[in-house]
Length: 182
Length: 354
Image (cartoon, rainbow over the protein chains, first blue to last red):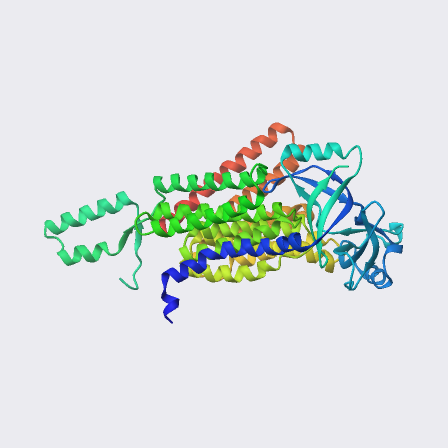
């Protein structure tokens, strides 16, 4: 086993691991951004800071809130069995409204064959009876990173009217690419 | 020499010894062979030099600078360019580190430190580039993996401890801040790190951090699962299990070089858990624990004296404000502390004689 004793070979392997991790981390979102379909969703930002990733705008989306009527029967029966705090992976089928904004059409258990849809996590409520039929879905699209000033301006502008998030979608994976202030 | 204990001396001590043995040889008391043989039983203790400290601080400043540059989100440089820049810097610093290793080992290692810190910055940058809202504990796990592989290859203790600290963030972040998924990777890392500990000749510094990580994991598992299994007073039960584990650790038959640090951590654990338990249980628990501590002190354990002091202080504060006139409480407290000081000194002396 000559290669095992080759010092240069060992060094190349060891020191390329961080690089491979970084590239591996970047490929899936880059792929979604490059090849995904662009959609727009209504959103409301606020502005906090993170120690390592800097200031960002934390976003709340219209499509995060769904009602019982939006969910198909399989989702409803499964979410009833979950403990509070647990989540249920779901697919959210979206439809395009007249003003170009996408809204929730149906929350489903199975991956849709066609159309625009997002992967999400449906949160089980504390008391099923007390939810008044309103549920919350997480999409992991919550953070938009921007320089401190830009983040503050974005937040100020959106106190007047709601903003629109530009999102690239590919096979249910979504990457937030921009925020537009109307 | 195989099979003998080599004593590590400070540089000055070693030089004195070397000088003396040489003198004895020139005086004809011992032979030239004896001189060489005796010196083989001693070696100079490697301590952190001034140069090393400067290099490490420099590497830390540079690395933290890059981390906060990423966090600053400077918009005049495209994010893709920033990413390529970071990749290029990581490769560059690692190559420079490898090239400098033969002649400048200390500078070389500090260059690798910079590369590791930049690797962390790279992870955060990707999350920023694509507005990924994944939780920061996953980032720390990836950072730990990269750093651990390089620590293992370079056989560097500081880097190994740094990786362990990253795992601390991963573990506690997953369990306390973001409760969506369990940090299962820790179950893989703990045994792997204990294997590494053996490779590092049972370094007690690394053992301290690793044991702390293990105890941390156990504590979090108890806090998470005991309330799910027991309805009545779950946190009291969890605390008591930790207390018992602390006592078990103090009796754990570990390898000789790890004994001191591991047993110390056991005492620390049952001491802290025990102190909290005195608020949960009746005074009889405290009394029984007190007797147990006295037994440990009698056996020569000095950490227990600190726990006894803490225990007394805790009750002293309780009682003095409840019942006793303040002056009397202070007098009593003073006598107790002086008594313990005397006891402590006597105990140390007894150890020295032994």
